[in-house]
Length: 234
Length: 238
Image (tube, rainbow over all chains, first blue to last red; front, top):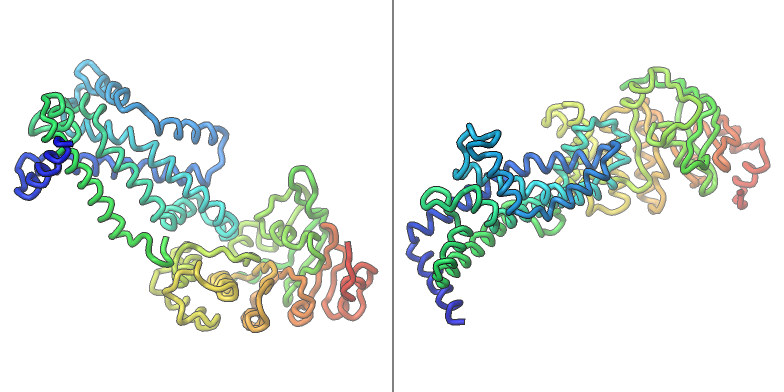
């Protein structure tokens, strides 16, 4: 209990005094996760829309696999990305291992199935409502997908926020591919793991509280900007 | 507006669902003059016939030939559903949607939407979300949206079902005005008053088949079949 209070007060002081290291780590966490999120959304949302409107032979199988991949173990993702990016790996020549880019790739792989699955649920329901209208208007597949993505944008925001939550709190994969190098690849979660290992529980807790506050602030900001939960809006 | 979708020739057309024939085989010729009203009791296949002609319901047999070809005909048609489907957008964005799909510039589409909103009595509601409108307002919006693209033919499935007299009259006024301007309608209803007011031709459906078809005046004055006579009298027909 004492550790909790110490952590809370330390977190408070770190924020109030705008601790240089904390700010740097927090900004790096944000930059990496938001980059991964944007890239993941660019893949996951069109994929979800495609699965909603298009009927093809193995569609159900693809959806089932996508849902199963939501529980992808981050450590395994980290290991696979590590092997791919290591010097002897197929992408070793790119020299990306132990860089923020490698961390972005790992996070993106983890959150794509999550965003795609949640988005698919929303888009499937909307497609059920819109099906007859859009068929009667003779719209193209691309127009159908664009219409669904636009009209379900607020529901898709929830999918994106779930992806952000998973990404910002991720530690296993980015520890492996990032290496937790000070001033280069250290982010809030890996710093927490490091401080815990050193027995610095107060500092680890402080970083944890900052992480929670950061996630909360991003969620609230996006909700505010997108005007969700307002009357007559979706 | 494409006016060459008619004549329509339907030959042996049928549609099934899970092996059961819902409608057909239907043989029909329509020249497109005036408004064609599809009459029949509940479950007779009115909605399915409209969906089959429009191409939403899959054709499992026979042929449907439009004068201008199937693809051109589809692009010259619109469909207003019994339960209007509202896009999760504002009234304005619902109205301009069909035009935006065709690449009409936004300002041009907005101008036309303003005109149609005025005709449909929706002027003060352009910025409201379409899904919060009342049933009558939704139906008028769906009709205005269908007519925004200047279709040659509009299918209407029970356009005034569950609407009060005033809303029904407003819908019918739009239909009458548009019909006079050259838009053709194929309308399914079991509102006999509406059928008498709007129809220039009647198709009477029973158990998924065209039981009787002809000019509205002749049908209402003296239907040929006993089932049609019973239906007009208000008896239960199965």
